Image (cartoon, rainbow, N blue to C red):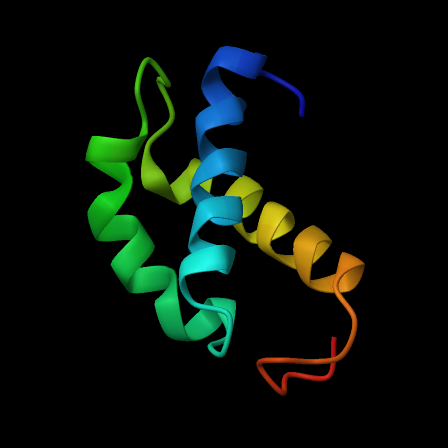
Length: 77
């Protein structure tokens, strides 16, 4: 991602991946607000505010979702 380093985006990707495993029967849209509230404790050294970090978290969530068989959350992805 332009304008950021792994130190910035890595925690955001991890936050999304961890959330996917915690909420396997829910969609990202259903948990996004909750993830945003938890970002300050999950961000580590990341300089990203949630408005930028949420895109990486969503990407990680959907990458895992596509890698898993079936459509557990029923969103068609």
